[in-house]
Image 1 (cartoon, rainbow over the protein chains, first blue to last red):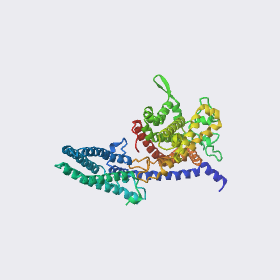
Image 2: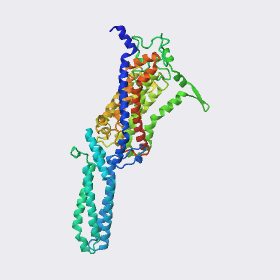
Image 3: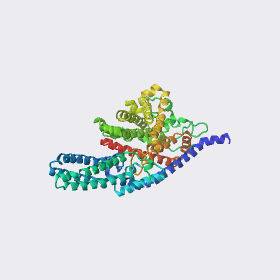
Length: 225
Length: 336
């Protein structure tokens, strides 16, 4: 190549032109890829919304509540007040079970109401079959894509859902037993339920603790399908 | 004929036409080798007389001249350029404005929750706009907006410094103030950026420019080091962009279906490609040659996809700034 030709190329910035066109093509491809990816935004957004029962109006930009902290907060918001009410009712029952039938039965009736409210709240908020299905879908998609499991699925893993289902079922049984106890006609009959009620209460408390632990713990490979 | 191939916006200097073999001058666009935030401004006393050459003065676009004219407003004469610069420069103070209520009420949860997003993203945007000035001069041949570089540079330093200060005071990392601002590698990168920005901020004035002479420009090249450190800061902050998979990747946990677009590192890359490309000497030579031929349209057509990518990146960074900034302003920091 002659020097003159090389100088001409330098003058015209030929190399710069080729370089610019190459970068431009790369940029064009990236922009197109971005637009194609953006086309799936709506579907991804809907999935994210469905997973945690979030409303688009919860934030100025429509970004839903999809964080681990928020769902844990939601769970604690249900369980903690119920635990305090139950503790107060149980203390009232313990004070009255030996000598004041009406007061003990009132405490038990209050316990029943709290347990039923807790069941309804847990069943309605987080552990619906739809959420269970969403969790499995998210985990399966992440597994197929070879990526980490998304946080939303961590909150609703089949394991957590299964534990929650058992806890709700056992709590319903406890509420039923407590209601029977509240219908006792004598103090002796009232106290005869104590052993069974305590055993059921311990089981439900253990299950609740396990749910809390499952929600806060990061997912492991063993939990993935 | 040279007269028929003259550039549309920026006529070539008669003594050194664009593209003549061996005559390429790095400073054919003043300061084109450096993206400093102050380099192209003339001081009030006309410092840097070497830039006051006749060809330099004649290379003014019609818009530059239009911007230099006054208009009458309320009995006083105001330069059009001044109004345009105020309007274009106003967004630079938004990050600090968003954090002002939390600062005045000493709202620690807001600082701890979102100051890094509000001021950090704000500083990043200011840096990008600061770095955008030179490419825009290259593309348009206009210079009226050059003072914005200094302004956005100053606000970059202020936002970055505020971010570092708040992180040192409110973060949960161990090791006291210094441990909180430099205890992790990504924080160390941010800390170094702020430390490098301090001399730039101090010397970002005409007095320092006069005193430092030729060394001033070299010092201002630290901007490029800051730009590079920002890559490492963001890369380490979010695991090179893929540590959390494709669903929850990005800025916090957006959940709006666009996790990739919220990834700061990708925004940085999208924006930086344009800013870097327009600084490469071979590309600048090509652009100068096309402009000398009066084919500036070809430059714009070729550059359009790169500019589109830049806008793509900027849109999501601006979105993040507005969303997080609004939450900070309301003192309800975003949990994302």
